[in-house]
Image (cartoon, rainbow, N blue to C red; front, side, top):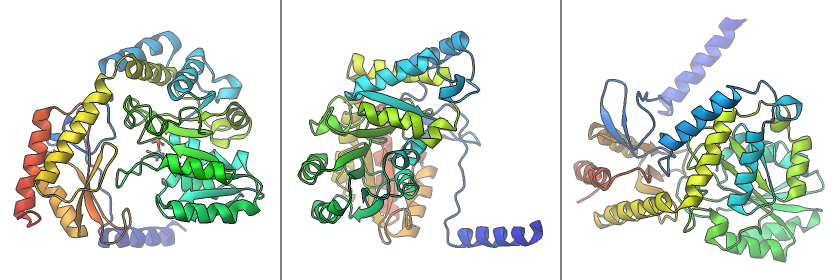
Length: 396
Ligand SMILES: *Cc1c(COP(=O)(O)O)cnc(C)c1O
């Protein structure tokens, strides 16, 4: 039996390779940071991690994790409702609620699970989900698992959203679902306008704060801070895998009854293991670091502005960004790959994205800034971009 299947797999893999879409994993042999070493020993400056606040190798987090592992053990060997809930989990849920100004929080193994297990327990075929066309794969999958009627609106297009909301008046309950920051362009969802439309058309709102929590807003409290809507949005989801320490874990936070029902019915919560106490403890420490002062958030914002303004001054075509994502537009797929490879030769670690990850003819290099970048690293990054840009004819 396997022979036939093997042939099929081999031919599929070949198709992927021939289309130039085969993903090779580049191996890093140091902790995740703004400066890393890759296999073979080359030192590179890292511009493609979601390590926005530079916490992935933070000493305080490592210590908090170690201490809690000593005190509470390695793993839970259970789901939350059987025997997988420790005080640490409850403390982290409380800390996340306090951070976002929400009523309650439920933890998941990942934000992928938080989104995957969000809609199905809450909504039925009588209800509607109105989803931004550029939403993350995990929201799309979560919507697919739910029987609610689906509506889609073009990215950030409020006229289209209004049209969909009008159509969705046919259903009982409506929820608008959107990413906080769209990861390919770095734009922030227009939550003020979304909220207004939600009021007008009697809809709930769900925002995925994965790329915005810790990043967006003066103190990094996310999109609800940016738009002065703290406590007003019914559902927020997020990850501990990006700005919040870069490890694993996800959460849904919002209205008390919503979280309560998710604890009763959300399948990735009910049928998947609790996160280890050490991870929860490091999560608590992360939120403590972010609320004790604004050092990391300020540095991230300053670094982003510094990098983006220099890249623009150099003549690069940069997508308007309101986050720590800087999309350097090259348009041509092959060029984006050549450019990224040439940058790696220069010791600059980035990724080129092209169709189908971004629309056809919209290839780019996505730079992600971090509070951990030094000015020297940013200068080296810009200098390498200019050197390669001239060599490949992108800059005159
Ligand atoms: C990264 C990301 C996720 C997935 O988060 P994990 O915790 O890594 O599963 C979900 N949604 C968005 C918008 C993301 O960017």
